[in-house]
Length: 490
Image (tube, rainbow, N blue to C red; front, side, top):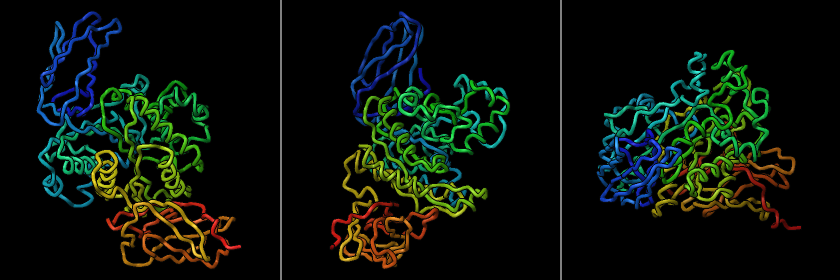
């Protein structure tokens, strides 16, 4: 059986359950749970599958799987809401690190947990791609895809290992508290990866073959990723058959294919940092959309996909290499993707940025903002799912009027005038604009730009001064858009 099956596992509730495994060809397999019993005959390929009726949220159940020679019994099984939590290192920052950075003790966090089972299963690299040289044994493990370890299902409590992602924890804790159902998290981020790492090669070959060509000299691959792979692999990097987490499709094979047959409710995702070194937003948007569609195809349904709009930082203070990163442009691409990808949502993180680190310390608001998206869109809860989202900008009487979705109670978090709005003409040379709020709209004036064509908000590398929020205190998303000029008086 897959490593996903074990004592304490959470099965997705209120959906047909598919139990799969492997055994000697010709064996009969029986599966028992919650009064249901199904039998099947193992085919010549050694694989078997049974389909069970959906379970209502609750438990505990006992799942028994038996052949003529062997019996497996999994205890303390619950049916609940199962979510995949993935992405780059910002999704991977652990709860124990969060507690240390905020000088908190366990009781501060875990005393707020509800009385429903809340569990996680972590998938971790046996050797993460840190800036060190790997030994040859690790390189060989990479080539046979034996590079991930798991520790079974664990309770999200102070008695459990603290390897759980902090964002995933706060996300799941919010769902558990609001839904009063068991919650299970499958957590498998990999730091430093790009979107193409998480897409099947067959999809890349068909839709984006340019990313597969001469990876080490490919201009569409981030420079630091190449440098890290060469450092990790040493001389083996010269072998074109040697594999690494950062190679196209590798994370799909190691982190997604092993779990795609396990029913989930949806996905939360935090990534984009590695793509921000490349000034190619069309490629980023194409790959992100391909990834989401690929995963939905893998699970056989349109699973909700909620992601984080990138934070900000001062690149020179963070890296000191004179490199330029395109975080504002990536943020804008992430916002644009909302219109192209159904059943998606975006949580803002700009207000949580720190000047000198790609890993900001305040994880809790991100988890809770992602949970808002799920509670509203997936579970039909009557809440405000996010902060103000750009809707349109129009020019009237030399003033620019900007409308937002989710803007009830539009205000600023510091009671000051709205900041970080800038306007540009056709030359896209942006000037600061004076801004004020009228009802649920922001109005801009910028005499320095006589014919304004473009407007953006929170578009700097480190836009912590951005202060626009709605009545729930949720921050507005960063954006850059053209201004509707149909109201200009000739």
